[in-house]
View 1 (tube, protein in one colour):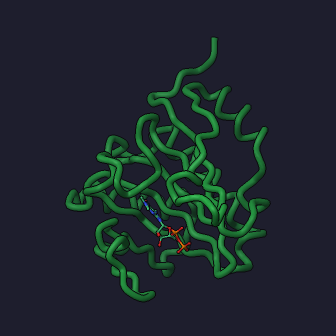
View 2: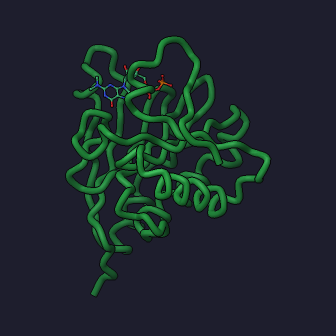
Length: 182
Ligand SMILES: CN(C)c1nc(=O)c2c([nH]1)N([C@@H]1O[C@H](COP(=O)(O)OP(=O)(O)O)[C@@H](O)[C@H]1O)CN2C
């Protein structure tokens, strides 16, 4: 028999079709709940580094939409990894896979707080966000951030910031407000 995961997960693809609404562009690719079915899907789709600019992959617990407004996300926020352009070749795919494995493998002590993760492929620099449910649960948010840095072997001097979705939604200009840093 196949090895069951603790949760069922859904992979989404955001296609950047300007003629469609943002929500219409979020396409559900597939769901899985075993290790084997994860690897079949992962090996079947393009790596993040080969996606068109402006597109995203998202992996969320089944039933949670990859959007701020979902009831599971609206009180939460994200740990944000902003990558340099040159990191698309060396780090992007490794970081994204490591994060996928952390999610499906329930690597975090506060794994109940985890909603999902998003990778944005962007001209100005790729981004990976790890979305948690409750921005006010400081101990859970900080444990997840610290574990992320450790699991991704991010150098201690690199600062990771956590953005509350409400602040990201209301963001005016490019200033990102971090509620926590690790
Ligand atoms: C329900 N709904 C409309 C809605 N719900 C959402 O949850 C949601 C959006 N809209 N997003 C829209 O995409 C733009 C780019 O964000 P980006 O994160 O792709 O980043 P870039 O600015 O393209 O780097 C955001 O400015 C926002 O307009 C983003 N987003 C998460």
